[in-house]
Length: 86
Image (cartoon, rainbow, N blue to C red; front, side, top):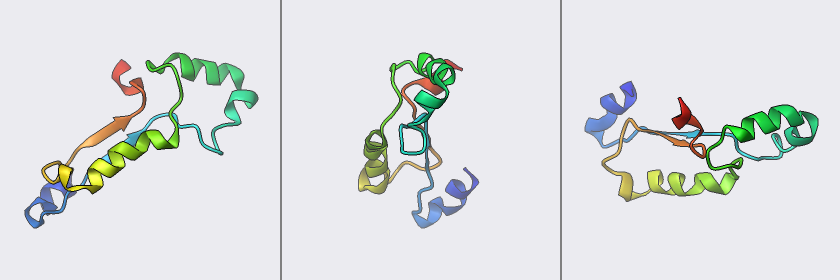
């Protein structure tokens, strides 16, 4: 946030994407290796599923486009509602 404030005058936006549990080659084995942990995590995701890499694309495109020119200092969670549980 300090960079967002400092660089705003130079028309530089600083934002972040906060991914939740995303199914990747690295995380896919969790389902079979640690089924109880996988089920616990899955049960706490309001959308009812782990994210896919493509779920991050829309936010990334938005932040890279002119549509976000007035957005700075934002942290955007892409986590199926996980962070909303508190």
